[in-house]
Image (cartoon, rainbow, N blue to C red; front, side):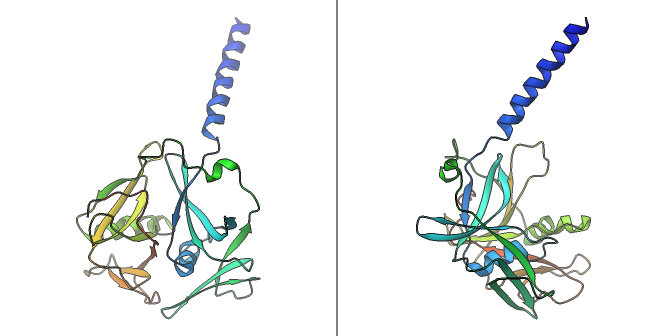
Length: 249
């Protein structure tokens, strides 16, 4: 009887190990290009309690800076910009509406946010392959009825003292509108990743959205994040359309 129990436990543990190894298997990521180093610096630094890590590496003749901020069906989603490294940190500062992003050798200014740059010489070969079975793999798009609902989704984690979600801006593939939205998986057990979005008629010439839950006013675009009493959400402009978001707008 004791032997049967031991064998059963061993079999159970062995199966769990197999499943865990499959879950941890290296997968090739999705790559999404942001418009410029300003947007990338804002993505990895602005409003982050701990700035995100930046990885530098070469792809062909291009120098890339990249960071991972999401998963889609357990596949890493990596945002990158084509830009030479030339330093050890991305330095980010927004002062009175003037945004400055630079690459520096050290962290000397306590008023500046710094993203450490990790230099990678070589990735596994699978890193550069298109994710297997990813031909029709996309976020499930959910169009919201108003812009305020989108802003509330992006900022709701601040209630729990977490960073607001970034809002990505890109050109619609179908019409002349621009899409503003963010990816969110409401439950860890849910296998579907959703992209909540709203359509706007033109590309905003701003870097942030200002919003107040205490005032009866609509969210507005802004570059100045110094006014008290407001929630600020960063906008990240993509170089082209979002390859994982298909909307008919």
